[in-house]
Length: 213
Ligand SMILES: CC(C)(COP(=O)(O)OP(=O)(O)OC[C@H]1O[C@@H](n2cnc3c(N)ncnc32)[C@H](O)[C@@H]1OP(=O)(O)O)[C@@H](O)C(=O)NCCC(=O)NCCS
Image 1 (tube, rainbow, N blue to C red):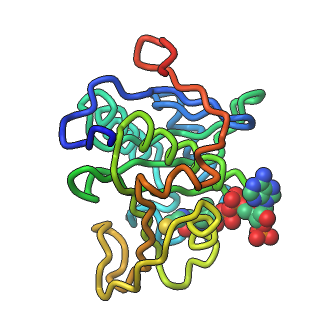
Image 2: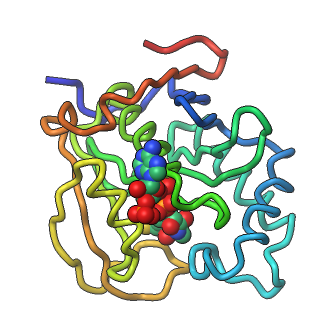
Image 3: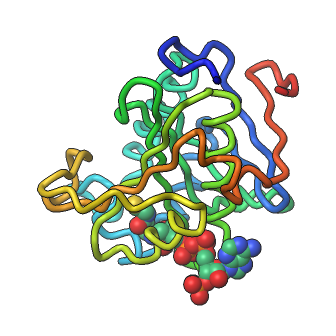
């Protein structure tokens, strides 16, 4: 049995490489890239980011979120990876591993910019996060929550072998999202070897750039 994630992760991957994607901890230069990705996505990302009196979301608001993401890596808390096209550096979206799922578990969250939907990138970046969570963080369970109407997100969960647990009433966890029901999907460590995520070719590198097993 794997060691459960009841102890803090001490050497998390800061960079992940999949066949088509680069996932990494973000820095100041990424704020403008993120803003361009969100601004160009229009209503596709409505309700996903915190509402702001400024429209579109300001560069400073993006920078504030990136500072929190970066701190999460260094403090062994939530990890939000920026997802990039390796050849061009184009900002494609984000995938996060969140600790609010509880002991020995991580919740996955993700979004893609509008113009790259429908090419399997969400499935690939979610697979990278799932593989990292089970093989490096050594979690025993992963959660994936989405709004009932978010069929594309539910499809990612099903593609990765997550089991639909149920519709949780009034369970919105993100403070800036509208209250409402959530669909809950889970994948257990015992089920992970049968998930397509376990077959993903993945390279992981720590803070010092050293390859992780
Ligand atoms: C949820 C979201 C990330 C899903 O994106 P997506 O593009 O539908 O998912 P994928 O990138 O995995 O692409 C899947 C599609 O690509 C196709 N595809 C092509 N190549 C593929 C590959 N190598 N692997 C998997 N699917 C592939 C699939 O058949 C599928 O096609 P379909 O759209 O005709 O069903 C996206 O809709 C989004 O960003 N939404 C807004 C934010 C959001 O809701 N986030 C989730 C909150 S819970």
